[in-house]
Length: 146
Image 1: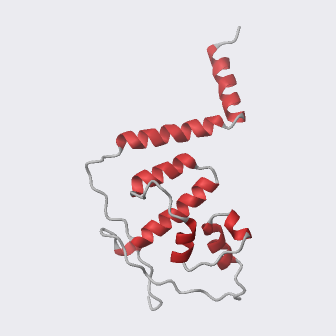
Image 2: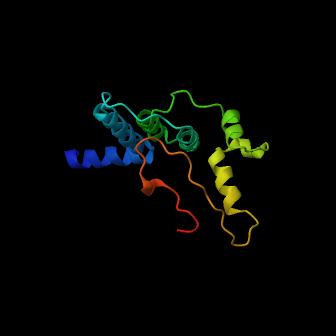
């Protein structure tokens, strides 16, 4: 007869081989976060930029089947429960897609654009955007003269 330790090891190995253990751990983390989340403390207003950034991240997380991580992002950020329409998101980012790019998250296309640009070592200057209330100077993009 198997000992308790052997039984635990067998169950753990079975759950790991089926890919269930990681899902259970993620679900537990999401539930713990939800239980600890203080609903009495108001969230800062969600800026337009944060709305777009969060949506890019959510689309990426859901595409990669990180559903519990996406649910925590949605709950913690105050992002609307219903995802933004992809075409709306593309329009807001001034992105035009072809048929093949529509099969992956927009974030992949954005990263691919910058990684594979034909530029030979030149850098793009990023300007600071409007920051949500409570953001600090450490969150801003430095100026070129800095």
